[in-house]
Amino acid sequence: MEEEEAPESTQDDDDWLAAEIATGLTFASSNAVMLTEAKGLHPMARSIAVLVIVVSLLGFVNGLDFASPEQGVVRPDEFVYAMSRAAPEDTAIFRGTVDDHRGMGLEDVTVIVQWESGNQWVFEETQTNAQGEYLLENLTPGLVRVDLVFERDNHTDVLSNRVLLSPPALFEPYGFTTVNFDFPSQAEFSASPCNNGAETCELRTIDNTPEQMEHPLMDPAAAGLYVVIGFGFMGLALISGGFSIASLRLGSLPLLRVASVLSLFTMGHFYSACILGLTAVILTFLVPRRLVPVMS
Image (cartoon, rainbow, N blue to C red; front, side):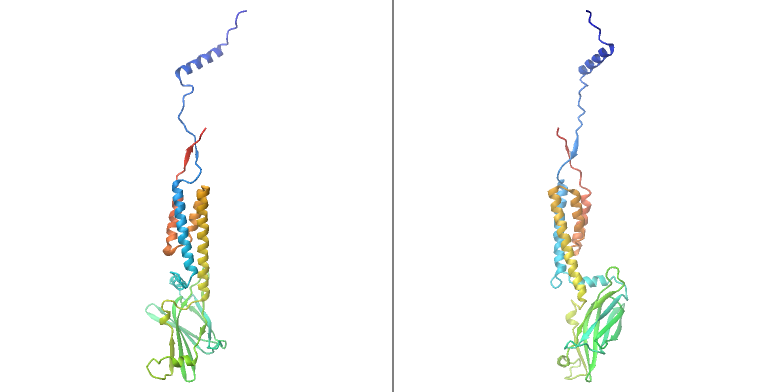
């Protein structure tokens, strides 16, 4: 039997394939390489993680400073005074009690508050009630001199102190300062020297202001808030440092970015953590993608 001739289309395909093989173009490589995201952090990101850990340590030390109001570099009164300088006038309320040496409230003690406004001294005064309580409103936050004047047994006894009036906190319209004074006994006033050098005097004074130049009296609640802020700084620092270490172990850039943002709020001494933390946040957005070829 005669062989059947191959269809013309099949013969044409065979001729095309033979021509392609002859020219070497059929299986020519394009040199393209498939890339994928590498596991782990980029070396630049690892350096940023170390920086964030250092910033967290600075924030933790700053928190310890806040939590140690009697020994820290920055004291509560310095912190409150710095805030009071930016506070508006007539936003401080001063209140408390005046007790005698037995702890009983003293009535009719004149409470005189003086402070410097511009180039002059201004003052406000009030008297204690039967329970020894006093209240003064619309004062200017900041350092003031408080004179307690009490007349008894033909003598005028004056107790002087420096007091730091707290500014308004957060969204409150007024800052409250509560200070309870212990008024010395007549024997203590008699033992203090007279201003004119005489042995006896009608006007007897006990002036505590010289020893209160660096650290004036202030509201205990304000000092307590200062300590709470310190523990907040330490907590943020620990979380930030923990996230940084976790980002190194997990190779997570988003986790490192969160850690750098948290470190920003630990503040640090002289705002060191703020500056370095902000730098770390910016650098996390500049980390290049780490790509490696896909292995077949």
